[in-house]
Amino acid sequence: MRFMFKVNISVEAGNEAARRGELGPKIQAILEEQKPESIYFLADNGERTAVFVIEMNDASDIPRIAEPWFLAFDAALEVQPVMTPADLAKAAPHIDAAVKKHG
Image 1 (cartoon, helix red, strand yellow):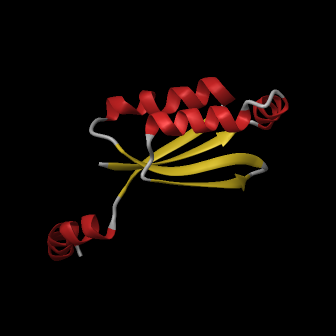
Image 2 (cartoon, one colour):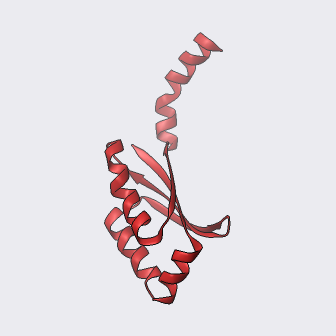
């Protein structure tokens, strides 16, 4: 199952890591370990932010993904399941059934 993670790196921790020359290398090390399907970087609410999609088999995988970000950057994290267009197409019969029953 695919999950989207949004990681906000605290300004203080990000600045400190940048000053020590560790911001890029730490991010790269985490990404090499986690191998996200896709990742984008942006500023969100004034913080350095990464948004990425990763395949997980079980909810117990969440700490494996989250803890490196928490520990390296004092990051805040959001996670939610997501679908590809193929997943959505596969779900169409369930949507149709819900419409017939509840719509």
